[in-house]
Image (tube, rainbow over all chains, first blue to last red):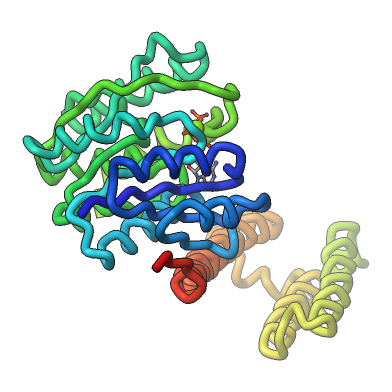
Length: 216
Length: 112
Ligand SMILES: Nc1nc2c(ncn2[C@@H]2O[C@H](COP(=O)(O)OP(=O)(O)OP(=O)(O)O)[C@@H](O)[C@H]2O)c(=O)[nH]1
Ligand SMILES: [Mg+2]
């Protein structure tokens, strides 16, 4: 059984479409409404199989954790995670799942050259530093379009409640030597610079150093 | 003679006593906090009134001037407060996480 976990924060505009498309490729769609102030919850309820709602906004990392725990309870064999804002095309889910045949953790890698300048700059730096710190040849440390075999979830489980989550998952996978693979995905940008800003980038950078130096 | 700095310390202590009491009345502090903080301000007030009373401490610690003692003591105190606040925030964060998860589980929507 395959589950998809979609964290959503004020995404009523694009969420419905994302869920409908995702349903074609997985058995259960789990949406975590992260204390949205718009009607994300109603949109999710209308379309998804399971909807969790955090009464207050806790951050993407926490929302993902809640969704993964639910997928474990549902006895999913594999979990796909993707964003609710339409930056990940659900039609590429089969590609990620195919990657799970030869590994336990698959990351969808974007083409940095197709990004707006600021995003390209930030992703290049963060991914480069990630490679150096964790001795892992990762193509895109920030990508949130991923597939994970449920049995390795406990080994890559993260503590970050906010944007550090992608990096921390990958860092844990590197440290635990999880069988890892990558597939290329589309690079989609709708409204520019809605999410991760400069401060988030700097925070992720400092966190990386912390995870390297203090692994507990 | 009470010097300028002594007067400032004493006025500060008195103002803080009033603020502390007001916080207590508005339920932002409990009785234990009220007693503890008021005692702290009282000590500060007395130190301002009788600066000689701390001079033995200052001398035994080989600190040159009384003012230096206050700077050092203040710095240590601030570090303690930061540590204390950090531990509170950390515990609160964990509690909020547990509450949010519990509520999310109870109110979850599951299509049948
Ligand atoms: N911003 C934000 N997003 C959250 C939160 N919780 C869950 N999410 C979801 O996490 C996903 C990614 O959020 P974005 O803000 O687009 O972050 P991003 O894709 O890394 O950044 P951009 O490249 O600027 O779009 C979306 O599906 C959000 O709805 C939260 O607390 N804040
Ligand atoms: Mg986004």
